[in-house]
Amino acid sequence: MVFTRLARAVQRRVLGLVRELTGRLRAAGLDCDVQLRQTPRGVSTYLAVIGQRGLIFVVDMTLVDGMRVARQPGARLEVRLLDACGDAVATCWTSAPDGASTWHTELERILSRDQAGRCATAVHVLAMGHFGLASSTPRGDGRSAR
Image (cartoon, rainbow, N blue to C red; front, side, top):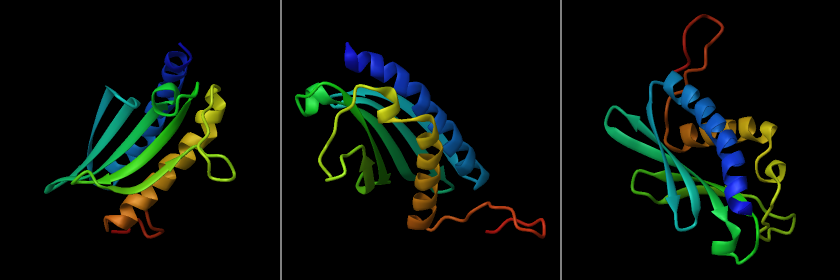
């Protein structure tokens, strides 16, 4: 029951993160598709990013169920950037200062409101740089930096 309660609360914030990230990616001329799935590890939100030639990458945001994975109550949010083949390019998740896995039962410790925006920015910058995609940041002269 703890995980179900957390999943509902975190999902609202994850969808906010998805909306912000989708807006940035669409401004760069990319299309996006979002899918929500219950997986063996927890609840996953997949943001597929599509360019002119097809799938470029996927952002996998999974709220991992601590009881299923670590036999501990609570959850953690794992964000993975996957290439078009499904291979992980980057992964981040909640961890303790010593790098050990931590499992939280409080929404603010899993994904606070201010973390969602920073996470969207980090994923956007990483994806644009790693996949060599043009940015649509406006320049001072009225043109886009492409």
